[in-house]
Amino acid sequence: MTKCLIIGSGPAGYTAAIYASRANLKPIVIEGFQPGGQLTTTGEVENFPGYPEGITGSELMMDLRKQALRFGADIRAGKVEKVDFTQRPFKAWVDEENYIEAEAVIIATGAYARYLGLPDEKKYAGMGVSTCATCDGFFYRNRVVAVVGGGDSACEEATYLAGLAKKVYLIVRKPYLRASHVMQQRVMDNPKIEVLFNTNTVGLFGEEYVEGAHLVEYKGEPNERFFDIAIDGFFLAIGHKPNTEIFKGQIELDDEGYILTRGKSTATSVEGVFAAGDVADPVYQQAVSAAGAGCHAAIDLERYLNTK
Ligand code: NDP
Image (tube, helix red, strand yellow):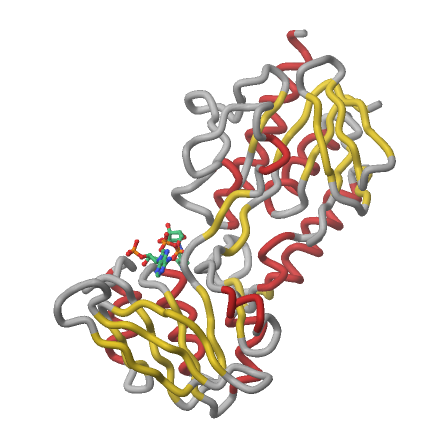
């Protein structure tokens, strides 16, 4: 039994833990299957305030974790498999074995990378298909890779990979990039990056590892054209999906599955349950905004407990 249960351990979860610990709420944090969250698969983080020289995503998360531990947060390994927010105290089952009862809950489960849904993505998982250029780019030094997507992530990944690979194809399904102007410019100015507009991926091929991709230009149009490119790596950067499967039917979600919060607060549709970070933020999805939301959630939760 705890006053404050925090589900998730990204910047939002750990920051909520720092604030809740310092408010003497003795929070329990369930870290999830990827302790530290998505940032642990990121290389250098240069835009988190307070690190003028930059810091690696893993180090940043270790620092946040240490800070939460310093104030007494009870951080536990494990994954929340099921919740019951219909009764009080709330219940959360961890790894199907134990459950925790909580007076109030902060959900900070983040989001995960989306796939195209091609069977070949599974077939070549770990054999040339990746969702994280900074994690896997090193394996593709002087090789040829493709990045799928036209947003900031895709442009960032393509630019990063161009620093390692011999050539980078950027596969964009529309006739334009959606990324911010500065990101687009970096891609366009990079001689190693070739942008394939109006192009979709149909499949991948290769003996054991990815050796190429089957593509289609102007899909479904009169000038439709099928062609192949030879690549060694296939990187997906087509956005994210929130980790809200276990909350379906328990709290209000939007059409994309992101948790809906009330006004400027982190309150969800269930009184006493709060949400912070990417799981409730389809717009900004930044470490610093997630950390800020974690702070807000802990303050909202403390006020809720005080007024109860
Ligand atoms: P976005 O949702 O912005 O972009 C997703 C891209 O993937 C779009 O170009 C989309 O195409 C494409 N896409 C989606 N589904 C498919 C599909 N099935 N087949 C082919 N292409 C597909 O996601 P991002 O991850 O790029 O960015 C998320 C947020 O994070 C944004 O707000 C972004 O600005 C921010 N961000 C900021 C960064 C920075 O400032 N350093 C770095 C990375 C992200 P279409 O345009 O046709 O819909």
